[in-house]
Every structure is written in structure tokens, then in C-alpha cells.
Image (tube, rainbow, N blue to C red; front, side):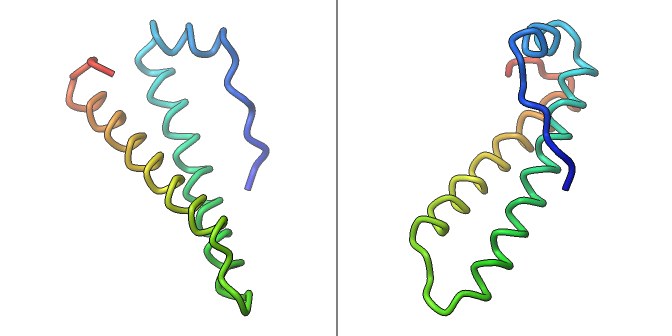
Length: 82
């Protein structure tokens, strides 16, 4: 997994005005999130006792992933309501 660059205020401003940049930014973060989720899931499987905190974090990550996919879908459909 590559080092993810934190989103800056300048990047957010550009994303508001540049649809292609917004799509790329969301796609990159979605990819990083899914890789991190897969790694966390693998680590959780190797532990003898389930970690409730890790389970909650995976659930939150899954909700965030769904939200990112919805935003990307709306961008692709031409809806700019997000």
C-alpha cells in the first residue's frame, strides 16, 4: 500500500471546482481504504480472540467505502449533488 497523502484545504477547493480531480481523489482514497480493510481483515483472522474495536473500525470503513462509491457513481451519472 502506498503512503496516502492527507487531503489539504487546497485539494478540497480544487475538488469542488474540478470534476476530474474530484473523481481521481475519491477513487484513490477508495482504493487505499479497500486495501487497508483487506489487510485489517487478514490480521483479525490470525488473532485467537476477536477485537471488538477492530470490528467496529472495519464496519465504519465499510460505511465510508459505500459512501465513496455512491459519490463516484453520482459523478459518473452526471449528477453533481455531492
